[in-house]
Length: 200
Image (cartoon, rainbow, N blue to C red; front, side, top):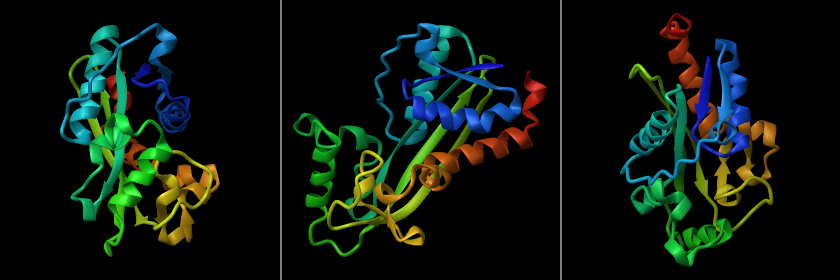
């Protein structure tokens, strides 16, 4: 079965392929099929935005589609930046570094530094069947930028069991413990439980 990934991100593609190939699923980027859909993420939750993206792409190609939505949830900020993680700070923040600095400023002096990266994956079939899986990675927001790897908020997200920030972890290790990796494992468990091969 060929499944369209509602994204242009080849890193996501690699992660998905590694898990879903065992179910006879070939994942391709939407661009590889000439699909150009500009989706407005109007949902209030990761679940809603993930479904919005999956539906938009599936309706344009009539093929099984997979989409994800993810972000950083900081407890002391009431869950912000949350679904707005990639747009945190609005037009004033043009880069990941701008958004990271704004986050540190917002957290200045706060004792509660607990936070989670959250990812929700929606796998939508043309017959209306949907598989939705959620994964998270818990950690703490640092007081300064540490590490040069990764992207987004990785340099200020400290993972206690790893004794470093995500930006300091080797990529292969990060991919093992990340919110997206955990969501993919949850999705794989659903497919196994539902005997997904029966749908093909």
